View 1 (cartoon, each protein chain N blue to C red):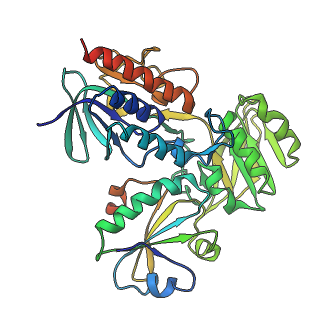
View 2: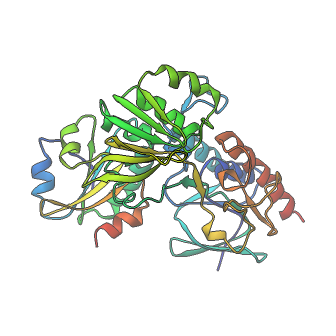
View 3: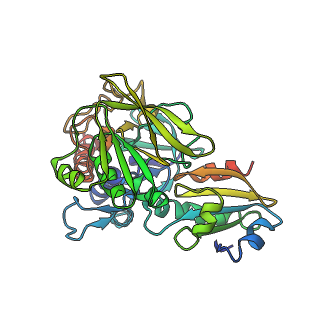
Length: 305
Length: 103
């Protein structure tokens, strides 16, 4: 093995590229390993209105490319390859990606999270045939039709609102008796006129042959089942951390998020966790970038020891 | 080889009647994941030049093509061989998954 980087960042989202920016700017050799394309979940977001400095909002993909360029300006490298193995315990850490082994003295875990699936039979089979995890991507296919959204958080509320402008009817299916989403959504959803709330309910059956035609929804209190005719079902029931690769090495919480405090230090020396992957109360682009800066700071401290 | 643009005018000839495999990327300009997927498809096209024809269908311009193949989620990558869709991938994919589609 030849080159040992000062820092390898696994995951090229906002947390990862901010760690890379701060690390490279501090003079360290930095490699970012990204499985798909820069940006992570941010890259798939049509418009971001809550990252400061962009009064008109900014496209998620554009911001991703700018963060990447910002880090590369100071010498950070990017390799488009998914990490398949990570040996994090030693003084020199080894990451296997795209069939090659990369070594570094510090590693920043920034693999983020992915949308949670409902876990219903045929869910995967019907993905792209009525089941979607991205309303802004796929809403257009359901113009003038009835759709359902499952979930009660900010994503579900934003999806329902977006779809209410395109679709004839939007059913919002939520397992609780009120939304968890920010109050900012409550009034617009009520005023949309075509959004029907199904509280204390969950989707139990997916109907349809080659494409979705409806879903069966059960009320948890009464046990009553209701069939909703809909061509689309948008799933927004939260996220799952991409921490499988690190399981058994760094400490995870009960939900699988990496345990690291505000210093982003994990239980392993020289290993840091940032962004959506880290156990923390608010997962936003701006909190991910903040994590990245903090991780680089403590990586610098660790490297100078 | 450059990535082609498929429309309903050239689809039959360039995709269905092609002698070799053709990968079609269904996308739209307002779709964030499509933007992430596009450079991956481009790289795939470059590496497979001469073996696989690669092209894109803008679903805003070509709603009929999207409907004909039941595309209800983008990005969708569809592999055609001998006039038939033989494999479909929905959502952003790493390049390796496109390569696996060929097998």
